[in-house]
Image (tube, rainbow, N blue to C red; front, side, top):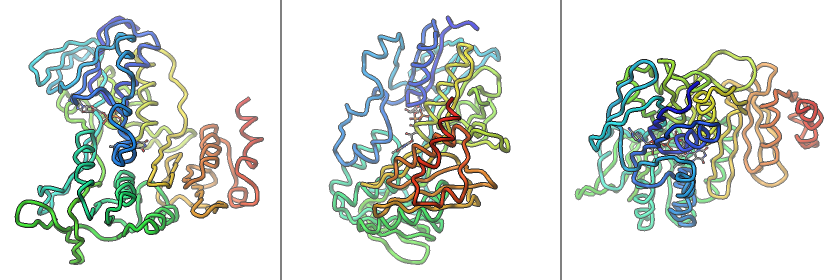
Length: 424
Ligand SMILES: Cc1cc2nc3c(=O)[nH]c(=O)nc-3n(C[C@H](O)[C@H](O)[C@H](O)COP(=O)(O)OP(=O)(O)OC[C@H]3O[C@@H](n4cnc5c(N)ncnc54)[C@H](O)[C@@H]3O)c2cc1C
């Protein structure tokens, strides 16, 4: 495998930076260009809804790598330049045209274009004060408006919406969360975990409404939002509205270039797209379910730092012809105010739940079972359980439902012997 060609990585976010860094580490010799549309050096997005929004982390604290990192690793970081068109020759080589009019030729291409927030096509969606959160510019706008807001309505009870809700409530803003489904975070956690989280938010003064959807955004006649009207006719006062209803993959470039896309660039477990050469990583990719162990060949799109990093490492290995790195079970975290939610594994809505209530109020671990096997764990303020079960899931170590339900014995104790022998 030739490693001295020109490598172009489109998208300078978590996955793009990791691909560049791992490719160099694994021995890519040729020039690496990491090209990003945003004007800022690559930064971490998770703090945007948490520490950056609350003012406890400034922009310079978000950088994914130091400025010297790129020069030290001979990575040509090009900012504020967006690829508008790709030409793929069919053998992995091709060229990209950017909005500056520049053409960049490459021998290998990695797409790491991320995702963009979904918006709601409702009356009033264009009013001032109706915002989304994906990037640093969005976060700066949100932080500025939050500082002057009395009331915030968050539309969507997913991770990002709940993190912002918690941050805003802690700052003294009156907050309501409106979720269409019957429970919060319903695509990722069981209703029992969702209820624990909802109770914590209610205790912090947040109004949590489920099973309702916004009908329109009401303005003051001067183009500023004043309320959200729900489908039951209720008006929720709001001088700020965050639309937090998920993100769609940025796969348009890939689709126009002829790569197979299906709500994300379709890739294999080595991050290779349908032409057999181009790679795609992170939020823009649609990948085979990476959960360890046998299972149906389901495809997933994962939006997490863990996935961006793992897929990027796999892509770098593919580029240099290294054996595939071993991958742990997918995991996520969400800090919502003082509450720490951690999830490992990919559960489905009909997976069974075994709950362990912790010693401290609100401490909770939900183990998810499919047939006889443990498939996922959801932990609220239980980092020790999370680490233990995540290791067990990755190692394929079983935990019986009886042992899971036995709260008299710590999970670590139940699993330590099996984990030790699995690691030998
Ligand atoms: C507010 C927020 C909070 C989050 N919190 C958590 C958390 O607590 N835990 C967790 O695990 N995950 C969290 N995530 C998710 C995590 O940040 C993402 O999964 C991760 O950033 C994905 O990395 P990526 O590189 O695929 O995409 P991105 O980070 O979105 O990077 C893609 C980059 O590509 C650029 N780009 C797009 N198109 C082009 C083009 N044509 N030309 C050039 N550049 C282009 C974009 O401008 C962007 O900079 C959060 C996300 C957000 C938005």
